[in-house]
Every structure is written in C-alpha cells, then in structure tokens.
Length: 101
Image 1 (cartoon, rainbow, N blue to C red):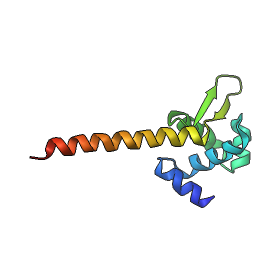
Image 2 (image 1 turned 180 degrees about the vertical axis):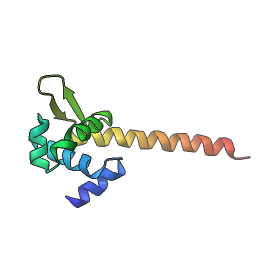
Image 3 (image 1 turned 90 degrees about the horizontal axis):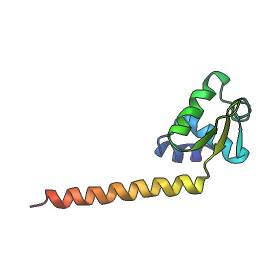
Image 4 (image 1 turned 60 degrees about the vertical axis):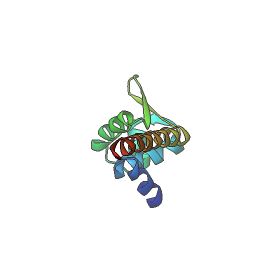
C-alpha cells in the first residue's frame, strides 16, 4: 500500500486522503463511518478527508442523509491527471518558445 500512497502523493493527496481513496476503490461507495472503519482513519478526520477528496475530484458526494460517497475510478483520475500534465507541458513549451530570442 505504501507504493500506492507515494504515487497518490504525487497527485497532491495526503496520507489520509490516499488511504481513504484506496479503501474507496475496493468499496466503490459508502458512508463516512464505513470508510473510516475500513481505512483506519479516525472518525474525527474522515469528513474533512472526504471533503478534500471531493474537491480534488477523487470522490463524488451523494447528498443523502447520511452523506454517501462514491469513488471516481482510478482510470478516470489518472486520465484527468495525465491531461493536466500534458497541458502544463504544452504551456511550458509555449512559454519557453516565446522567451527564446
């Protein structure tokens, strides 16, 4: 799991966010308490962790009572991140060309 956490850290996830995402990938969806128990993340932290994962596009929130969280598949996440990297490279290339004499 440590290797996966290190990869997810490169996408800007904290250790707790990585653990929650990895857990969600096996659960597909669930309530915060279930995700907390399965991942080992304290209940006092899980809502903030899931909120950040939602902001970063790794989980979606279903506005039910209680809230239900659904994982965004790794394929979708990695494709989106690849596109961001490619766009950044293109922008860097344009900037580099405009700065050259």
